[in-house]
Image (cartoon, rainbow, N blue to C red; front, top):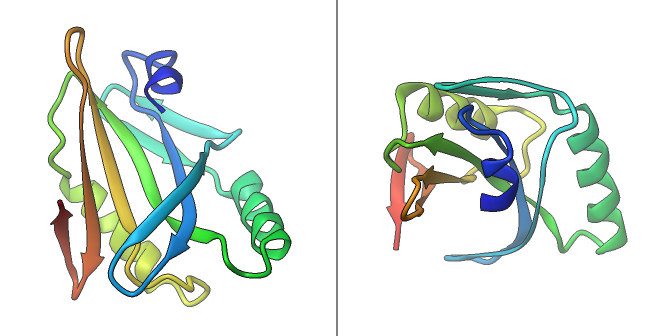
Length: 132
């Protein structure tokens, strides 16, 4: 993810996380990026067209075991703390009628020249909870 994200600097970039959700943890098996998106130094919006087709395909091929787990995106030269926009986006995803995973995760990758950082959050009870 960092390699792909660095190719989009100084703008934000991101995609989706897929894998297997167990009762109290998530096993991320892969990630995917959108083919259409808009982004800037402080924002990223993906188009879900190719991602929805990818998710449908991987879900069918895995007999329903591998599914959408959540979102990831970068904060270039920033912190790993989520913004109000990040919270609102993941909240909307969790509340969508067609979303099977009602506790999606959010990974925020902070890209710096010398050291990269990341944090994972889970949407639970209308809050984002940091995962350790």
